[in-house]
Length: 172
Image 1 (spheres, one colour):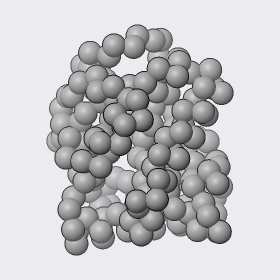
Image 2: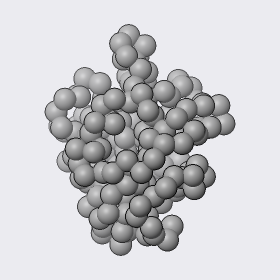
Image 3: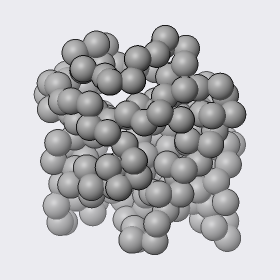
């Protein structure tokens, strides 16, 4: 089940972020995030307060989280989007996370489908997102779900992470 997060979900959301950092420290880095910088408990808390944090849950265990809002980073202005829309008609996926112990079960696909359905219900026409160029799983996933690579641009994320992000879009 995927639902809007409640305050009791914040510890599990934070635990997912930490599990991703631990997993990447032991294996391969796919996120380019920085522990203690992004994502953090504060990231989840702010999204919860804004009503934009969603969780995937099974039998009381949160297996994934996602933030869905209309916030387009400033760097999006450098992307040659093919699908033009007024900002109020665009939804943006941020910080889609799957607990490492739960990967390979199609949960990321479920979260993306949920975001598409939710954005449509909100009257949005386009869904956009970005992911680090080194995030191979995400860069394979989004095209397989019908997302078009609109372009790449350098981002200065959280004022401390220099990275090249691939930006994707899909008409809803």
